[in-house]
Image 1 (cartoon, rainbow, N blue to C red):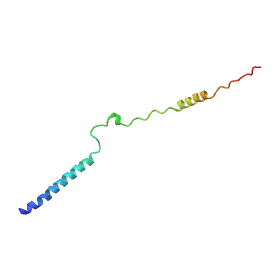
Image 2: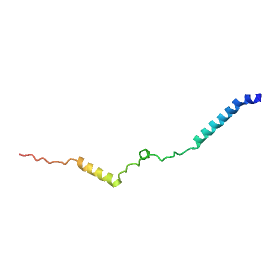
Image 3: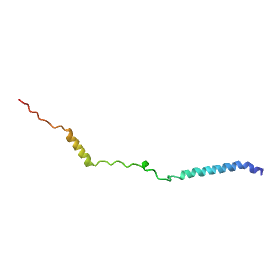
Image 4: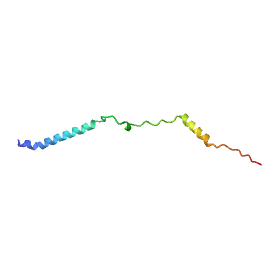
Length: 77
């Protein structure tokens, strides 16, 4: 019976180690959150890119605006 008292701390230490190992392994296996992510944290969709026709139209508009009209000055005699 006297030898039993010597092993009580060892038994408690082993129980503690087993509890701690099970607690850590349960955290590692949990991969997905229980609730779905909030809408504002979801990935935002990429903005719509303009089509080739729209880009070409804008470039042509800018080109016509930038080219100044040549004014012909007639010399008054």
